[in-house]
Length: 115
Image (cartoon, rainbow, N blue to C red; front, side, top):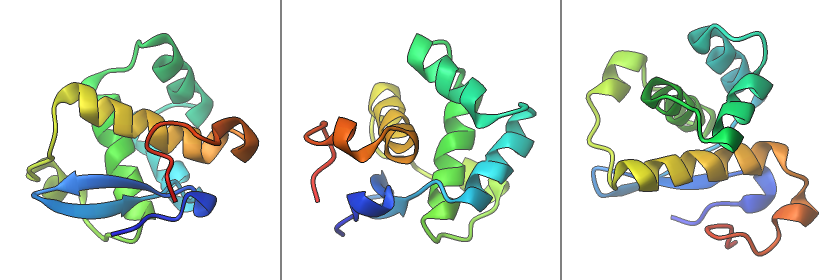
C-alpha cells in the first residue's frame, strides 16, 4: 500500500498488513477527548521532549488509523498485533504528528516520508 504524504498519511503495519494513518480534524478531536488534554499541542510537546507515555502512543496510533479510514473501536485496537518494536511504533507516531503539524517544506526528505 502506498501512502499519500501530501494528505499527511503515514503507514503502520498491523498483523502484516500495511494500514494508512492520518490525523483528520475528527481524529484530532477524538484524540484530545481520549487523552483528556486541552489541546493536541500538549501531546506534540510530550513527543518532542520524549516524555510521552505508552498510553499516549496507543491513543495516537488508534486516532491515526481511524483518521486513515479504519473504523475500529478502542477495544478492537487494544487487541491488535502491532508490528514492530516499541521504538518503531513511537517513530511511526512521531511521523504521524509531523505529517499533521510540520509544514510540508520542512518535512521534505524526512525518513519514512516517501511518496
